[in-house]
Amino acid sequence: MRFSERVMAVEPSVTLGITSGAKAMLASGEDVVVLAAGEPDFDTPESVKEAAIKAIREGRTKYTPVGGTRSLKEAVCRKLKRENGLDYDVDEVVVSCGAKHSLYNVLQVICNPGDEVLVIAPYWLSYPEMVKLAGARPKIIPARRENAFKAAAEDIRAALTEKTRAVIINSPSNPAGVVYKKAELREIAGICLAGGVTMISDEIYEKIIFDGKKHFSIAAVSEEARAATIVVNGVSKSYSMTGWRIGYLAAGRKVASMVSTLQSHSTSNPCSVSQAAAEFALSSADLEGELRRNREEFQRRRDVLMDRLSEEKKLRPFKPEGAFYLFCDISECGMDSLTFSRRLLDEKKVAVIPGGPFGDDRSIRISFATDLAAIEEGAERIKDWVRGM
Ligand SMILES: Cc1ncc(COP(=O)(O)O)c(C=O)c1O
Image 1 (spheres, rainbow, N blue to C red):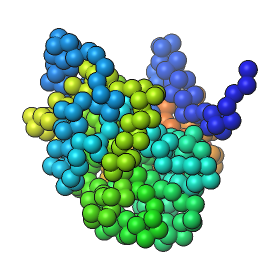
Image 2: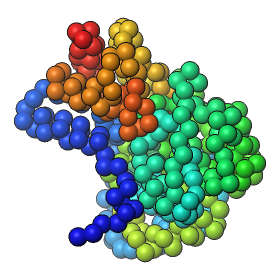
Image 3: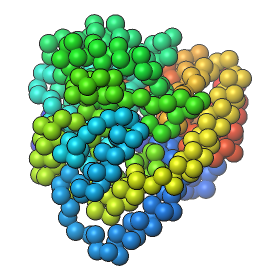
């Protein structure tokens, strides 16, 4: 059988090897501490589950419009207005099977062969692969740790060519928990607007943000920025709803209609029952208390993990301001990130994710989306192992 060059150009996920290895060890009764999760360990709120059960009982189990029900899109518009100060019409919103699907659709719709999409490293590992699948070329902008892993405006300006189609902004970010300030986003938006470049703003970790910081969308910088930005968000991380597969985008009418067309010939509508659940989540003010408690718990865990790892001088943890990952420099340990992660799993039974596939081979990603006892035990084992080197 022959395979498509497009798909063959995509990197298989090396992180999967670590996670499935850890799962197999756990299944065979080994005492593994898993600090690799990419999803909140909290359950979906009960009231959201009830909304889904109600939708099933009411027979909301048929096809819906391709880009989501009107009532869900209205809930998304109200959310964007209320929380982000952004005005969108229902025709400018498309609901898909997760934010990942929204991002994939966007890149398919805006990219042509030869186009370049700027990706800031360290990045979420799916960005470059999705860009390649859209026939374009990811152009990586390395963000330095000394610059808090943020792209300097000058670096973005210098990377622009006539081939640049878009830049992906992710705040709060995976893997380093970077949160861009309003002024920084204003500067980046100015450069993109001057260069005629689309901004794709992945805001999936919006609600997992620490130290009283507030999320700000680059689309809210100005009306011009709003017009040049595609906002991507969803309920996965904010509402502990990763399995429900609901994400959405808000953009200009033309982008939204093209994404709907693409989706109409691929997945059709996202799951009708999940849409009902997401609509409830986005509309329910009663969930605020639960979300706040989850956020506070994530912050507590971050602080414990940060404190513990900082005790070992060969480890240089970077304090995240959002999301639920801690990016830790391990370059003093004398091995690349994949070797470090594999050996840590074999020798100390701690699963972490290597930074290499995220564009930084000097670091590992440690998830704190697990209970405090596991975090403390994991941190002790890592320190113990590193000390013994
Ligand atoms: C930065 C980032 N964007 C998007 C997603 C995908 O979210 P969803 O589950 O809604 O597809 C993830 C999930 O890991 C992520 O880390």
